[in-house]
Amino acid sequence: MITRGRHVFIYGIISFFLLILLFYKADQTSRYPPITPVQTSTSEESGFLETHENLKKRRSLEDVTKEIVVPKQIQLVETPLVPVEISLAQNIQAPEKIRFKFLQTTKESKTTTSESPSVDNSCECISSRTRKSYDFCYRNPKNPSLIGKKFNCSYVSALEDLKLIDSSEQSLVDMTKAERNEKDVIFVSAISSNHFGNFKEMYATIKRHWPMQKMLLYSLDLSGSQIETLGKEPSVEIRKFDYSKYPEYVQNWAEYRFKALLLAEAIKEYSNVWWIDSHFRWLQPKPLNQFYGEIATCFGNVDCDKKSSVMMFVNSTHSNFAVLTEGLLDYFPTFGIDTLKYNDKGLQLSAAFVYLARTPFTLEMLKWHSLCALEEKCMKPPKAKLKCDIIPAWDVYAGCFRYDQSSINLLMFNSFRNHNHYFMDVGSITRTYNHY
Image (cartoon, rainbow, N blue to C red; front, side):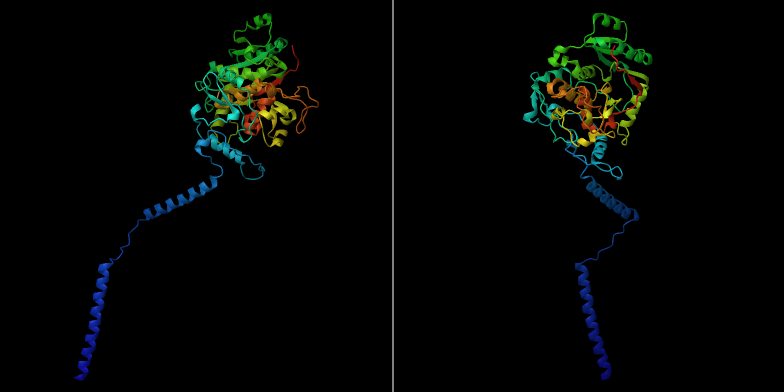
């Protein structure tokens, strides 16, 4: 009996503790409800992972492109990026090439004068007609910290007349399209009386291939009888070059200033200009539609480098450096001068045969080329002379200068840093050195 009572007492104690434990757990459950796991579908999980991976990729891409992508508002002007020479053996593109590709895939934006960056006072010229402000100091497109000597503000009116500044109303050529309005394509040349026979032969080759093609011929000093003879050609229009609009020294033909100004006069009136000197014979030309098509294809191909609206076609057989007189660099500064010395990138091309399409790039280039022609010491620097001390070659200065040819080549080189970007094959071309 005593033993049974002891067991009952023990069971009672155990039951009492179990009841206390049960009430404690019930109280805990009421305060902190259990967290029910959310069922996530496979697609939702994969969606999260994919988004996360994209985020990682995007951050990685941003890290890589921080050094080469410029802000949108700076794309409208050249950024101060100095190219770095990289061996061709390296599987890396030079920074300037990457940058070109980036800019080529960005649509061109039109800016108004009010949107343009303010002009430094030391470089500013103000139009007496419109009171608009213009920058008359050339800045190297690849390194805008290199700033040239200021051009004379008295030439503002000449540039306005040529529509090289404040020319927003002009129609522009879309280089991505091969079609050209034939009425807007012109062949242009200029001769003095002692090149009369040269022109007749040159024009005969043009007429043979394009019987109806219009030729605009500027007379420097043709006689009345010479003008009458050439006037019998229905597709030849003869105009006397009006020297009176320009400084007196433009009349010195041996300095070739007239060529830069006539290019500007022609592009003002026609949106596609082929300049050809009377000494040249385009014997077997590439069809023009094919030429325009090749350029259009290139503009649509990110890997193609020939994206220029100014094209040159004749090898001068020497470097830019060989005929580079120092005074030109005062106005058009450059860098990496060794690149100008060799055939791979620094070849000088003949200015006697050039194609120009009216684009913002062409108008900008002609602005500086024309200013150089108007500025006395730019297109004829001190000590400049046509006759060379030695035959021009590559890395040795030949002691001579090529006037308009040196000017346009330096401007083009500064824009591309490689002559191959604006050098094309348009068929068989020969030239004569005789004057008749």
